[in-house]
Image (cartoon, rainbow, N blue to C red; front, side, top):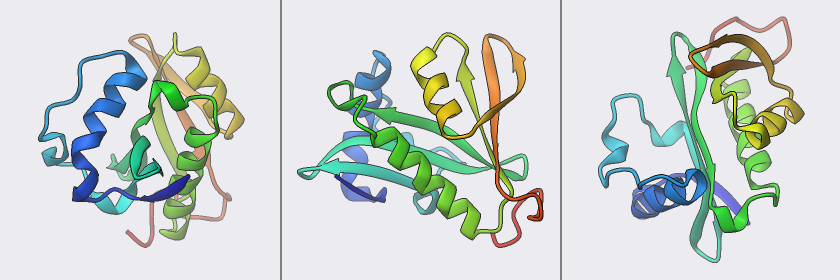
Length: 147
């Protein structure tokens, strides 16, 4: 498995991975045109040149936010999500960030277990989801100093 930044060459594979991961209809083909999206803080997991997982993160409300983490159904429970999250942690830590947050449906037990294992803590609850946050060292800026 290889983790690398998302690039245009792989944009067309992302909607199908999302659909497989969440048992939903694929994203629209122009998903990457959303205002917050940036290739610089989003990664894919590749096996044999096929996208098997991806993570999208960006700054929201002044802090890093994981918008979506998805692993193709056929590749789940193999550590791909863990590697993608660690890549996000490393990236935002290099940017001088102190924390990163994510929203998770409270019924998604496997996702909650993964985020707990990775060190996320529940910070709030509303509308059927939890806000979880991961904290780096306390001496870092509460937001990001190098973004």
